[in-house]
Length: 337
View 1 (cartoon, rainbow, N blue to C red):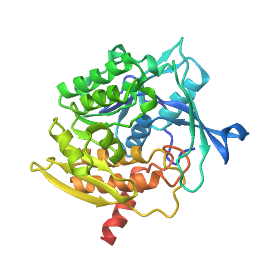
View 2 (view 1 turned 30 degrees about the horizontal axis):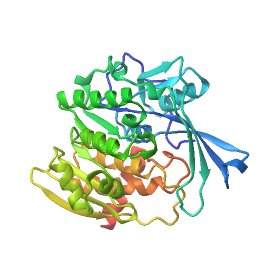
View 3 (view 1 turned 90 degrees about the vertical axis):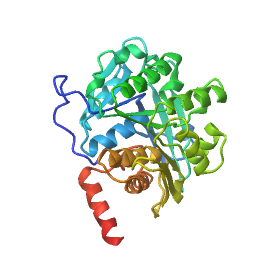
View 4 (view 1 turned 180 degrees about the horizontal axis):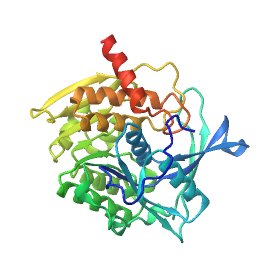
């Protein structure tokens, strides 16, 4: 299922606390074996899905010690998610089992020609929707170097929204850096206004904000990448990277001390297979590069690169590279520069 080398044993609870933490909902994904309407599909491949786990897996493949905080049901799907994440090297000491709520599921069509695939979710009342600040009671925030958050957990329920705010507040207090990808899921919110206010509030607690252009327009009311970036910089972010799809990305921030802006073109892709997970791949690239001490331009280039790898495979995280693969790709790019 994955091209990385699974670890032989899961990370024990006695191991050092994770340096990077992510949280949210992982679901068991069934992706159609053949194109066509889901009602007509006979065979599916089982995988896992979740924007937050995609980023966690991507960072773990690059050699970071990444922790995953969530809940799964006391069912076979929850076991499958735990085993898959541990095989990817994730520290699952903060993955709880909920005996009264099931693991979320989703079914995805096999799209043709790079179109966005239709997806059907079965996540209402899931174990992860019951997340609350109590799930973070045993987190050692003092060991934390970085927290990655998205707009999905706060959309799941009021208690998961409280957890999101708690996680960002605690990480901020200990001086960990925070990245935030709005990852809009309008259908999970009561209203657009609630979504906008909640996510902008969480973005104001973050250091690096990573909206897509359409997301940024909806959340800020601004039209251009520059104005969207300024909106979040004025509210406390130190860097904003606006994703522009195949065109690349726009960066504005003061990570180097002085305010700077740059546009970094995207990478041409021969065939787009599945667009799901491209933004998560982008986040993996940007976050890993910034944690590696790379320049903003290098970080955005790496985000564009991993995002382009993600759209060339079926599945949400199958295209995320290992450290060795990424090093080779970047060396190739540097030689061609």
